[in-house]
Length: 189
Image (tube, rainbow, N blue to C red):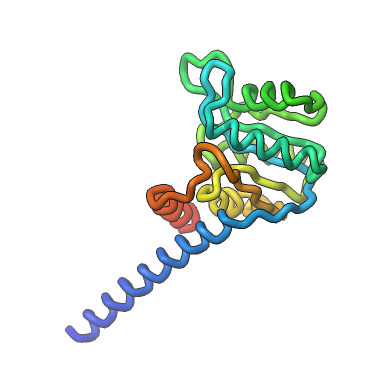
């Protein structure tokens, strides 16, 4: 009986350490803002309203535009499909928004597939391979950065995070960290 209790205690302690470690990783990576040159910037989708980006999507697009302006990468890929009844997609809305800021048509690619992070990144993978990309910068919310980077690296790319710093979605709230910690653990295990 003592051996069973010890084993259960070890399992519980290990689980707590893993959860706390992943949470710290989510917070640490989401708080880093280092610029690296890459072959493409991938902007993960978020809601759009009839062609107008939500505050979360706009913050991501603005971040990608800032990176493009300082020549971090020459291509920006916007992602995300649409909900039933939508007349446009998150990716197309993102592309139009970036074009309205002065980016050239050749610089912005819309990949309008995927209703979640993994599906969107799988769709982008084909386009990145067509471009011959090996280094990718991912733009998303701070707490979402770790999971996104793990997925992109699992696809064989050298990946860097460029989380949003302002606007909706950029706050590292307790509930967002908990949600992303659970999502990372689900993806990894």
